[in-house]
Length: 121
Image (cartoon, rainbow, N blue to C red; front, side):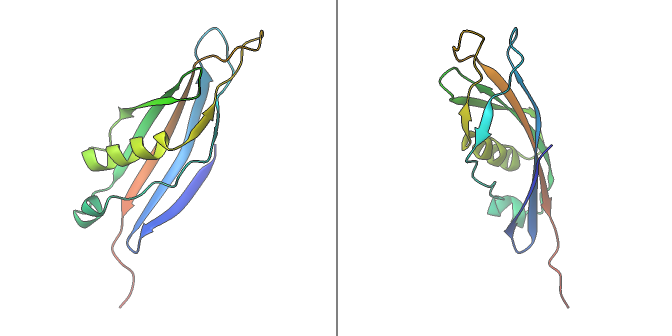
């Protein structure tokens, strides 16, 4: 599993992990994910002190385009939407079947949103 850390603001951190990656049956190959933009902690959610974990799922089409939906909500619509936008920013290369044709695939990713108090005196 790959992890990333990106300070979204002076008081926030977003952690993300690439979770299970699998192709639609009958092929069990994974889509390749690349060029993902780092998630952006929504300023309004940060100001409200919202934190949580959102898991999103991308159904990667044969053309590599993702359709992203929330499969486990953080409890914050703003953080869920930011997770969808982060995952939708990724480029995907679909796997291929034994005949070399692209096939649909599913990629799950979890974003952990943490609004922390500023350090200092």
